Length: 178
Image 1: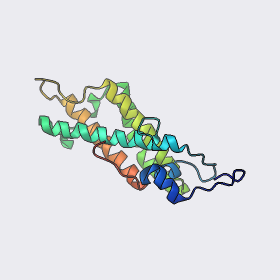
Image 2: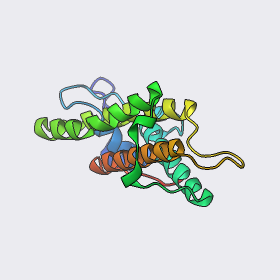
Image 3: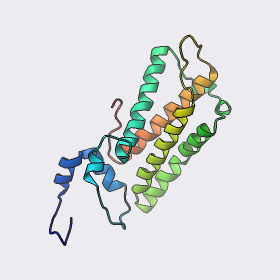
Image 4: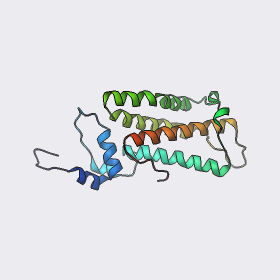
């Protein structure tokens, strides 16, 4: 909306221009007391610059890893999960991010500030991508699955769950494939 130019964009126009998920995420991403300036080209784009696409892509990638694990016969067992095997800096950063989720959601609800969840999801997706860039999650070739593979797979499953839950809180879909 622009008072000077005399233009008004309705919510229906916004949804038509960028889609339901992007519209919901874009509106939830900003604090109520801040001015919202939406770049429609950015929000309609399917790229890592688009915050909702970035988070949804992380979920789709996580889902893909879990599907590939099933195909390889790699299973995870919570009873034998050993977090001490996750020694990389990026693994620790992702674990810390996941541990923050309950606090972020509680604080967002207490203050009625959903943008905290949206920003948290972006940060967590970023932590996941950094982890994925350096961590060998699934065995390659004839390599046998190890306890480290299983621990990393558990981290992937937990990250997928947290991102799906956060997107659900915002009313945004968590696609399995993109």
